[in-house]
Amino acid sequence: MANDGFAIPPGRSGDHPAVFSRYSRWANGRLYDACTDLDRAEYMAERPSFFGSIHRTLNHILVADLIWLGRLQGAPVQLALDHQLHDDREGLRAAREACDDDLVAHCDALDGDWRDAHVAYANSRGDRFQTPLVQVYWHLFNHQTHHRGQVHGLLSQAGVTPPPLDLIFFLREAGA
Image 1 (cartoon, rainbow, N blue to C red):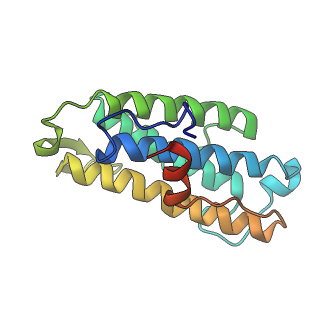
Image 2: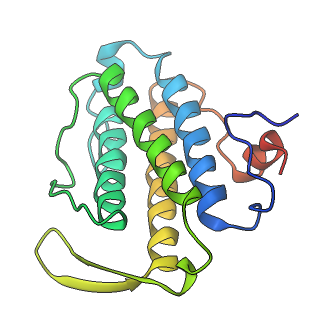
């Protein structure tokens, strides 16, 4: 049976942003739930990884999403990719959930012409780019998946069994 919080709207099962925004919200929720099995010290502990801890990796995913969502909505935000948004997992999770809800709403609002559109933006160094919107969505969701995989591995290092995050599990749960 489909979970209404993740159900893919009728007629949108082939719409990449509509599906992947919901998949990301689902996967993020599962990952944050798994993090509650860690005490604060283990959650914040230095670990061999690019961002150095579970918290900082989750933080980076959110920072990147806020940057891309700002570009997509025409309201760019200037944040360093390692900017610390919240010092605690509760604040980070609340911000993550709000961003996921915004991303789902944004993707649901896309009209039929979005596949032919481009987005113009400046990166963190100020270099200007114009990228097909479809490629921006591919990047946004692939980036999330990449770093969620890192957190998945870090949870294993911390002795927590990480949850399955495969897209097919989401699609089955969402009733797609």
